[in-house]
Image (cartoon, rainbow, N blue to C red; front, top):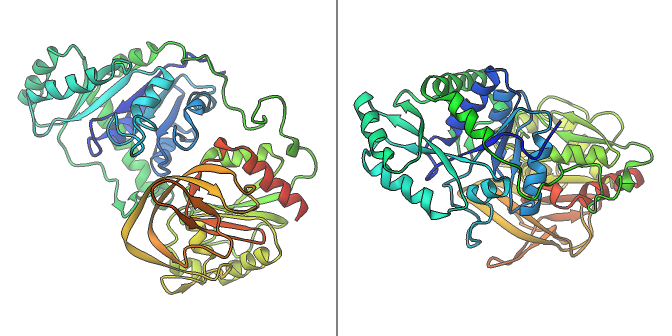
Length: 461
């Protein structure tokens, strides 16, 4: 059951590096340990944190991104994820008021909190301040009166005396201190060039890390007060209905593609391909596909009867040698692509379809090479489909996100996948026969026709 008054709170911070992920994940796990069914969410396009959220709660971690999906879908997607839960915890992104560059509050944690009508818990790194914390918190509380900061959790507190000074200072602001976490050995969550190492690559150690986060939060935070704060949230503004993948965009009935034979769609998974939004599989299933996951590191064949292939993002550069060594699967992917079957590849999938990656042979579907680069490419993109493809008709506009430290040469094929609009106008990606390959990560909930079109092409190709 889901109601528009699902108890909820947003964990935010003044800036990145303040401890949001530790507190949010630990809080999710601590609530779950108290017997609550916890719905985990992450503001923004990040794929990695939701994996840790899933470990903490036993439920699928989901993203809430007002840029990729539009503000109007944030609450419906939240309610879809919160179905059957007692409480929801939403981890913010960057600083509370930081959003898409040049777009005001769009895609910020503050905007999502307002769209959900959710109280905010501000995690403050107090390691190098005492009385100044009051000025900092006062600024965040007063900046936007529509954002309700319901409490503060102090992180990296040095001593009992330090905590006393911080609490005294915050008394004047009128915002309760709901937790104080002492400065201690950091929880073991290793990072590399694109952030935390995903759960799929270190599951046993990740389980231990989440357990440490839960213990830290349980020991240092007032869990009953945090639960009361979550329960103080009223009805989600606008009284929206939960998002439903089986409905058409106008919500007037089932998707027409859901009828007829079920084509089998193989979706890449395993440690090398961990970046995927849960709604994509739900949309493919609702459109009538049978979705089967396979691991390109170990499976030497595509699932029997594969009619279409989806290869999302991840870290193929870390596993280039292993992916290359699996020659039988590389040949199977190339053969499927040559047959004209629909193939959708995003970022890591794009690299896997190239001739080679850092000198290691890949599938050779695209006449292009990929290599690691010194510069990180990161940011939201406004895109338009250049030509017809298995995902979109020419002229379809979608918003996406780039997040990679690799370069593909050439960057676009004879028929590009996307034209990038805005300040940095360029073409990008490859469309050839049934293949659509691009660096751009998109969220299909923003354009349900993508999944329906893909499944229909799987039926007819």
